[in-house]
Image (cartoon, rainbow, N blue to C red; front, side, top):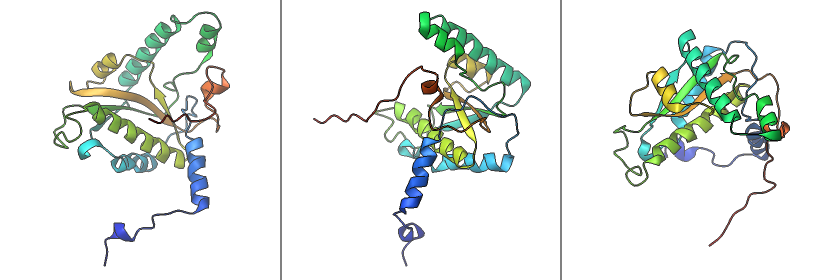
Amino acid sequence: MGSREGMMETSFSEGFRDQLELLMRLRRDVRRFRSDPVDEAVLQRCLSCISLSPSVGLSEPWRIIRAESIEARAAALRNFEAANQAALAGYDGDRAAIYAGLKLSGMREAPVQLALFCDDATPKGHGLGATTMPEMRRYSVVSAVTILWLALRAEGLGMGWVSVLDPAQMCRDLQAPADWALIGYFCIGWPEEESLTPELERAGWEDRFDSLTIETR
C-alpha cells in the first residue's frame, strides 16, 4: 500500500479553485480592526500553519515574538509614529496630503500583535541553499507570512503588515537576539470591513497593473 501522501487527491474541483481565488482576493492588508478579542484556539490554529511553509534547506528560520505587554506595544507604537512622521516629511503637495490621510497601522486597535524575525544564524538546514544565497532564509520567512495571512483570512480574521518603522529599534525594544533580523510587525484581528480592493488603491495612492508582464529570453 502506498503512503498517505501518495494516495492524496492532487487535483481540486472548480468550486474549490474559485474559493481559493476568492480567499486570495480577500487577503487584504488590514489597518482597521474591531476591538473584539481573537479566540486563542483560532489564533494558534492559524499560527500552526506556519510549519507548512517552505523554507530553504528545511531551515525553518522563522522566529516569533508576541507583543502583549503595555510597554512592548507602546514602544512599537512610538516607533511607528516617529517613522511615519519622517516618511511624511519626504513627500510634498498632493502626495503629502494623501499620505497624511492614510491609516498605515492598526496598532491602537488590533488585539493581537506579532513581530516575525529571521534567524540568520540558524544551523538548521546545514546551509543548503543559503550558503550561496543567504537571503533565502528571509524569503522563507516571507513565505511563512503569506501562509499565515491566508490561514487567518480563512477564519475571517485580518492581518496588517506594518513596515513604516525602524527595524533596529524594534529589535532592541523587543529584546530580540542579535542574529535575528526583523521581517515585519503584524497586527491581527477582526476587520472593520471586507473589500476586494486594496485600501491604498481606494485612497488614490497607487493603482494595480492591469496585467502581469512576463519577459522571455
